[in-house]
Length: 80
Image 1 (tube, rainbow, N blue to C red):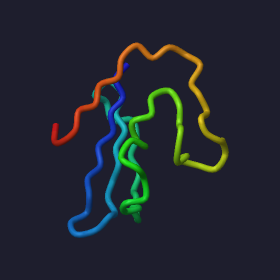
Image 2: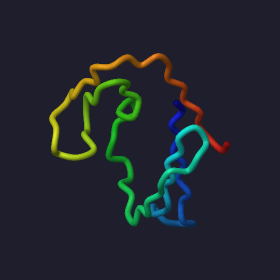
Image 3: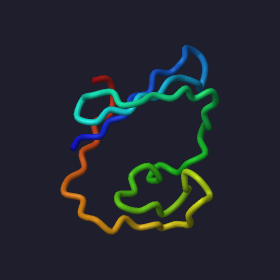
Image 4: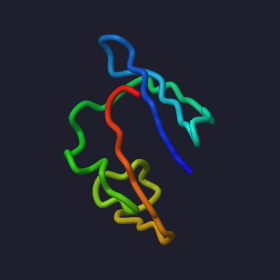
């Protein structure tokens, strides 16, 4: 499966709309009213199969490791 998320930022603001895709099919979107500027380290979003730093929600503690198999990860940055 291919998972992809796009974020369409509101002009001049940190808010916008995030859309989640599975195999190029939009499966949901969410309005993000307020972003957080400069609160994460540069490597924070690149944890694969675990979360070694800032967690998304306080319901789990790092590193919260994924126990399955991840066959491939590809980062495509920029406009698609």
